[in-house]
Length: 142
Image (cartoon, rainbow, N blue to C red):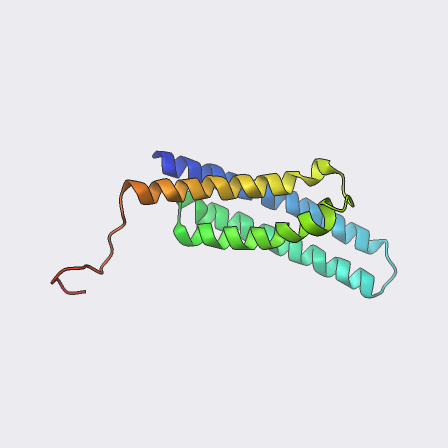
């Protein structure tokens, strides 16, 4: 196995663990919603739980299906989706102190690790050998 593939797979595993952590968080939101009277607050908590479970599923599926193979599109899909999920969490939950640093930092740490490892894997893959496609800069047919 190449170094770039190994790094990408390590990143993919980070995304899988990120997803599992967020399934747990989504479950916690649904439990919290069950304690609130039927209202807009309850519905929003359930909606947020659903969104969190959906992002967790995206992180896991893209991680296993695309990041595992060091795929460029997979890199960008998880980079954007997971960042959109975790940046607001850091800004609106962790920084104000609504959740203790531990275990609160676990999700963002896995996000940054997954992003870093997959980025390094992509960078090494691109540096080793440029991919050739059907487009050529010569007199041959495109």
